[in-house]
Image 1: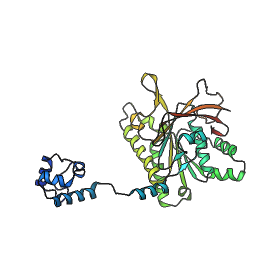
Image 2: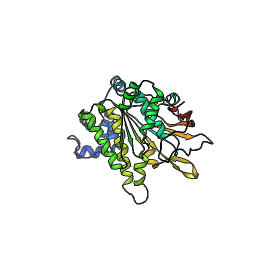
Image 3: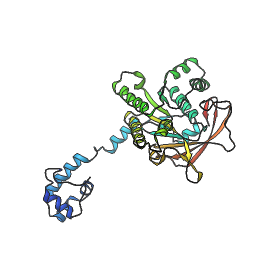
Image 4: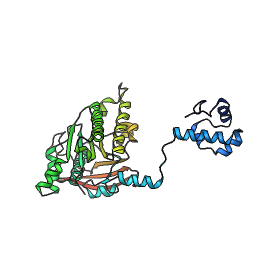
Length: 327
């Protein structure tokens, strides 16, 4: 932000012009300057400059927090949720983190929905609540029940885990944004015990609701995409929940596949996991295009392509079977 006359009582026209002549033109320039040296260079009172500095810091700087308090806050708000697949947990440094947005990207039939159902099952079996937002009609409750049933034998535990998962179907971006707002309101108001223990939100997928608004003469598409990105990241950070969303792959330059939704979306997720089919793997004809049923055993590769804490471009082998994603 540029310095302006009157932005604080001591910022008179004379002071402003002297600062400008010394190359101090923005708030950042002023804040990062040594006050004593600036006083000598501009022939201004040290006390006047110090008072301006204090007022600018109070108005424009972020609220300061010491390292110990920040560390304690991180411990109380950040948790690591196991995905239900040991090799992917190792790849992600323990699992999926709350307060972050994690993207699962891959071509059609690469196992994105199977992974989401497996993560939902794992988190629910640990006693945490999961909201599964289905935007493409891929959610299959019988498949979810099968995965949970393969992982625990006791009927009581299976029933308890299924009660921890809610599914909301929305096939429109505006409905999705309204749903995100209603989740925030439910957590704030504390009227629904389910949202009080909510730890994971899955959006399968963002591509289904964003793609129709992008390209061509749809000028509002980019703005709405940024709005959704901010809403999901705000939800994750402010309410200490993990948000997992799915994205598709499209053909990039020279035919090289890349994540859909363009460059704007590339910077949105803190973590991105790429799922790809093994060479020679073929989609079975037993399932319809919108079905989430897995083939008896199918091999996939999971590659970490974006991370804040782990080395990228590391991979592991996974398999998709009756119990979901394993490896």
